[in-house]
Length: 320
Image 1 (spheres, rainbow, N blue to C red):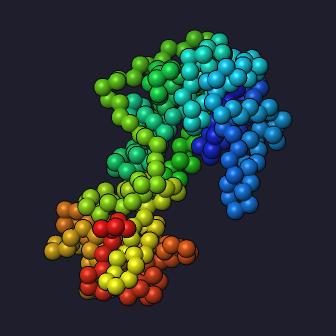
Image 2 (image 1 turned 135 degrees about the vertical axis):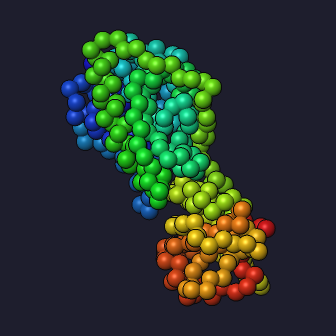
Image 3 (image 1 turned 90 degrees about the vertical axis):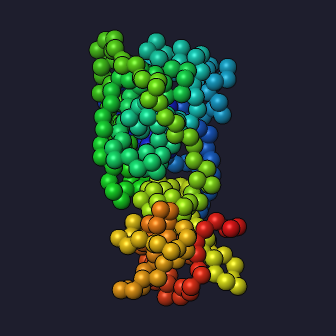
């Protein structure tokens, strides 16, 4: 079969590489336009770099759904589209280009977490399992029939970035297996139960603002979910000083409660110096590492040596 890969970013790369190593011909890559990134503002990276190293033509339309986008896709004469984290909803005209339509590698156990950020929202909501679903693409977002699905456990300290790396490898394997099934003949998919569908909308910077009114376990889930982007952050407020922005990198629910302390207040500890913060429901969070604005990441003990905490210090939004 003639395959066209459509994707952008690190989640899609293992699938692309697995297809290139397979027996079917990858005739093109459709990826988003170059965006400057990194310290050197380099624009040649990721999916495009892999394609050029394998002499695969690259097509980068602003929108694949325009007449020019559809025409560019038609020029590849694909039999099947393989899509992973492409970032654009495909129109009926796009899906009609290849005789076999398209399949999508989605990082959740559909119908749960349809949308752009399924991994982060699964962690945020405290799921113990997630996985990858391969669907036959439709014009509705992540709503097509399921062709393959496999679950994995979420580690108790795993961040979105760490979990994504594991799911990307799983997705690559399932994608190749599904392509082989489609090459052998028609495949009957399983319809999704619409009543069980949940949403996983695109993350914004505001989603990183830590909500200390949530119970400690939920706060720690948010801290893991918002890494590596948009990063979980809060502000240290001290009397007579401007707020200090902190990225919280590691935290865990404290064994002790925080009775008598409002969410966000720093909780004194008797046995050892600790960065303990009151959360909702009389719970508390122990912060293990932070990154102050403009500085390197550091352990909580190191931060506390330079910022001796006083009664009344608290964490919360920049403007209380």
